[in-house]
Image (cartoon, rainbow, N blue to C red; front, side):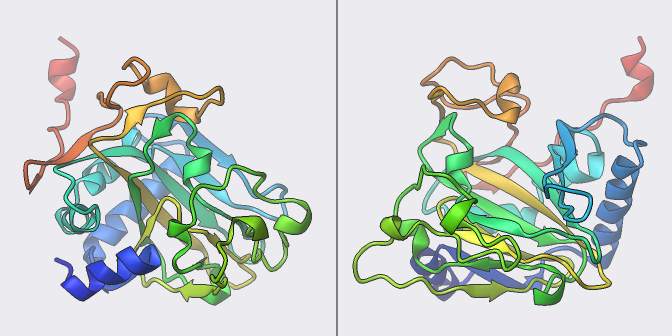
Length: 286
């Protein structure tokens, strides 16, 4: 559980690098093995997306969306008691938490590309309000050399920026930033970039409006990580003309609370919910 100073730091800065492990070494190894199966095309099912969002063969960022639907180990990870309990604390009284989606990002050695400076929420134009927190867990040690994230403190208080992310004066692709739009910085605020190294099996939390990015990976080490985007139970389906990859799974009407089998509830009435039992393959054939 988080201490009150940690909770207050998150609310002030918009992110929190927890520091201590939230996964055991065996849990990390289990997730790595599941990730390798997915990359090899040997997972039990197919994730929603598996692609290079880095831009070229020499700037690679492998993104896998909803790996939890392809591998049971990642489905169980959504319900990790330590992580979900802390998200509930940070969510300031939310009595229900659901998963919007998860996202693997891998920056391979030497050719791992940068992650442009951005806020998450503008990339999710089909949901509101912006009451989401991401739990970013490193599957190998992530530091500045292999492309760990950096955050801009207090930027979650500046509102949602709906202009272009990347390109022109917004994005320096080699050094990855700072890629904020100066007009969105309130008077009296300064842009300070804080590096957020995370050891394998530990977690960093950030609000969906916090500006963040990551440099390229020119090291000899990979940088795989799993981010789960948790949403408060009050988040609704609010399409606004732009689509999102997982929108095809949404079954509720516009304006309704976003829920359904593809957006699992992980916390309710003060307790973390266990993952549903895996289907019995013998029963499934009957």
